[in-house]
Every structure is written in structure tokens, then in C-alpha cells.
Length: 224
Image (cartoon, rainbow, N blue to C red; front, side, top):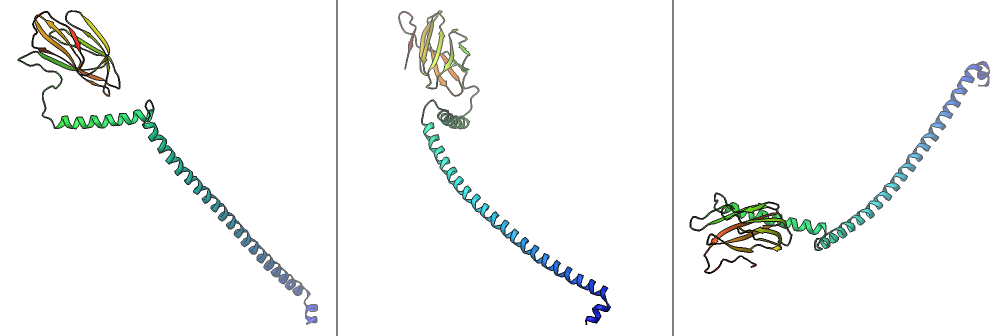
């Protein structure tokens, strides 16, 4: 055998080099793959740990969010019962809107008339109309007038009135049902504040003829 190596030195060197290269490559491949597996396992463990930590944080945050939601609902209910707060007014507006929808539904189901706010009776004089805040009601026959500049949430209004004889009245606490009586050409009339709508900021007024009273004419306000 030794003679073969001596007789074939080139082949011996090449063969030896191939064997050494193969062994080196096998050792490198084994070590590299093993290190690669360890690196992947380490990354996997790190990701698992981070995921566990994130999940724990999410659990804590969800618990806090649930508690904050409960606290918010509690404070909102408290504010809804506290006057002069935004939630209180929002709740009141919601109630008024439901009331308006209910009234609209009732009006829809009632028999329709040509105009529910302007009317005249043939037997005795009566005239009324609905106005917005800032406008003035003026009776075309008697020239009695009534203007409202403000309707408060408690359904009181600031009212200014001028009667046919030029007498003026004003009050800050007028309410639905208030009347102002007067006479014109021997006929007795009443100026009636029929309704106040705070939500729509509108009001309804009418003048109607009433049975004449004996004696001198009288002009006064009646608060019902």
C-alpha cells in the first residue's frame, strides 16, 4: 500500500485533500445547523415570553377599561340628575323630543282642519295665531298686540302688551292661561295667552269676544 502512495503522490494528495475538505464541510454543516436550531429556539422562546407579557398587559387594560366604563356610566347618571349640566339638558331635550313626536302622532290621527292656529267664529269674534319668539301678535280688528322676547325653560315668558286704548302692560312671569280684558266700542274682549312652547320657542295668542259687563269698561290682567 505504501508503494502505491509513493508511486502515485498526486493522487494521494488530492484524495487526502478531498477527505479533509469533506470532513471539514461536514463538521461546519453540523455545527452551523445546530447553532441555527438553537438560535431559532431562542427566538421562539423570546417571542413566546413577549406574547405572554403582552397578553397579561391586555388583560390588565381590559379590566381597567371595564372599570372606567362603569365609572363613566355612574357619573353620567349622576350628572343627568344634576341641573345646569350638559348631560342634564341632553336628557331633558331627549324627553321633549319624545313628547313632540308623541304630540305629532296625536295630531296626525286627529281630523284635519284648514288652519288650527288662525280662526274666526261667525257668531262671536275670535281670532288667534301662533308666533315665534321675537314676533308680535296683532289682532286685526281690535289692534290689541302681544309680543314675547323670551320663553324660559320653566314655561314663563317675558311679555309686552298694548291694548286698543293705548294702555301698555309688561310682565316677566306670564304663563299660559293669563288674560288681559278690555272693551272697544262697547264690546268686551279678552286677550289670552294660550300656550308657550319652550322647545320650539313659539307661543299661541288669541283675542275673543266675551259677554259685555254692565257699568264702566274695565281693563285688567287675570292670572289663572
